[in-house]
Length: 113
Image (cartoon, rainbow, N blue to C red; front, side):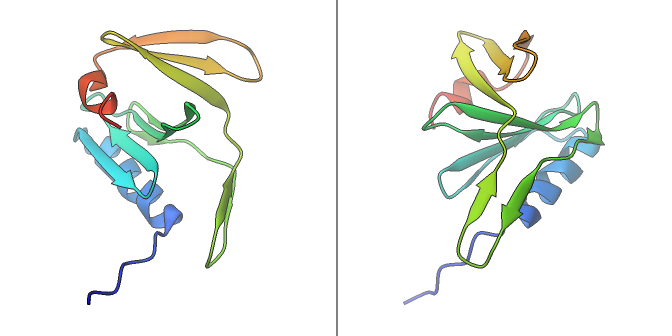
């Protein structure tokens, strides 16, 4: 039996931020979460079950995320929600209530999660 590697959210976030800085598009699953980076330098953390979203990088520059991680759990202060509307990734900021529709993200891959 292989021992399953424990999810380290901090490591996953830093990894996808590095991919965004390199303008390398990737979609990665980490447990029930999805992280993705784009060739434009953006990166996001998503909870597909509850449609929660947090931007991790913009134009290759990392953005901070308020989260706590222990050996057995993590807690994320999700700043917004998302939905996929055809080719558009639609993000709603919880604080400002601003809605952004972003084209060019891999929505076809994100819809599979």
